[in-house]
Image 1 (cartoon, helix red, strand yellow):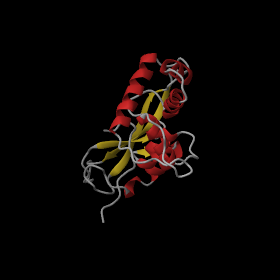
Image 2: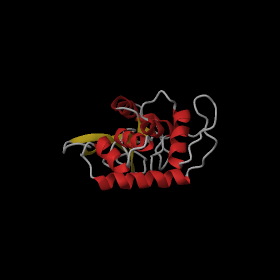
Image 3: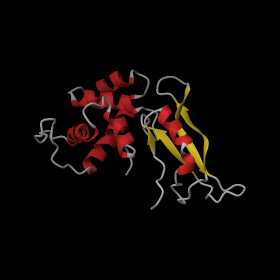
Image 4: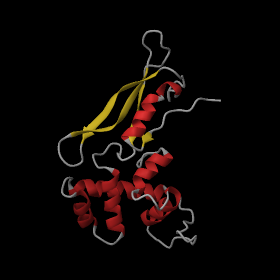
Length: 189
């Protein structure tokens, strides 16, 4: 039996700490060796609002130093509230999508969701990426909460209805739940 690899996303700082505590029991995602992984610092980046630096995840190193037989490569475990490669957090993106799908224009929705902290072109770029991803995603018949198929015509609305069923309607913010539960980034190809 192959040892389990590390998660790609952690739900909170506490879960990120738990990954660090059990890292010696996890296999390296590159060479599949256990026992050679060590913590290698934090992933830091700018906050969504303001110029402060915040923690976005942790880095890990498969040690090949001394008598360790690791591969010498690193990997990251990100917080599920982080959209990889972007400054925006999943909550802001979720509010933006909810506002657009409720009927607001993209411009008005982005200005409300981002609160003026991010440029309007960022909202348009993120919308385009989400629409492209929704077009590529397979669309099975998506039941609503009562078991009937979704009647939404727009692919993005169908995708959100599907996420509500898969992730659970109890989650207030489905994008973070998507990354945490499925261990896939929002914009992974």
